[in-house]
Length: 179
Image (cartoon, rainbow, N blue to C red; front, side, top):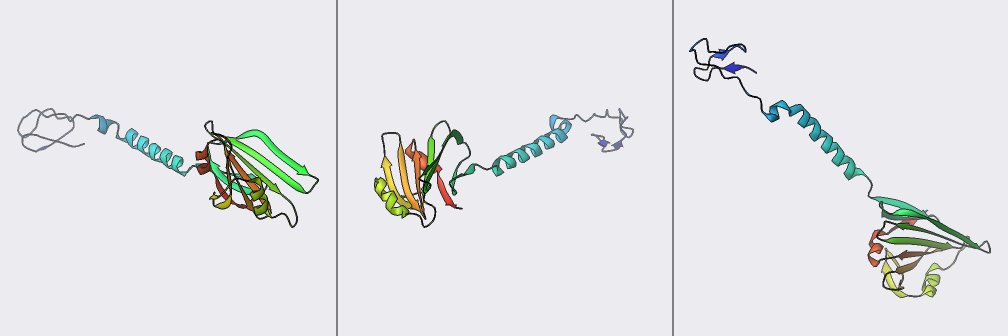
C-alpha cells in the first residue's frame, strides 16, 4: 500500500519516517479487522452460501411404495420395522407399511386382486365411513377415536387405506401414482 504525506501529499517510501519534502512525521497506516481478515471472511461467506444451497436442494420428502402404489411423505418419517404381506387363497393380496416421525404415525395398506381385479370403489364403500374426497381421491373417511383416522379409496384394481394417528398427518401424505 502506498503512503503519502498528510501535510503536502508527497509520495513517501515505505521506510520514510518523515516527509522528505516538508518534514512532517509520516503516519503508518493501521490495518483494521476487515483488512486483516478479508480473505478468511470471503472464504467463510462462500462456505455459508454453499451450505445454504445444499440445505435448500436436499429433498424434504421421500417416495415410499406399497404394492406398486407410490406415496410421498416428509423425509423425517422413518419406516417402522413392521411390514405386512398377506395372501388370501393366492388371489387377494394385501400389503401394509408404517412410518413415524416421533409426533405422527402413518400406515398405508394396499389390497389387490391380480387379473381382472375387483371393483375397488365398491370394496372401499363396504369398509364404511363418511364419503369424502381426500388425498386427491374419492373415498371413505373414518374417525376411530380422538387420535386415529383412516381414509379408504379405490385405485384401479387396488383398495388403498391411509391410517394416521393425527388428522393433520393426512397433510403429510400425497398419492403419486401406481406403477
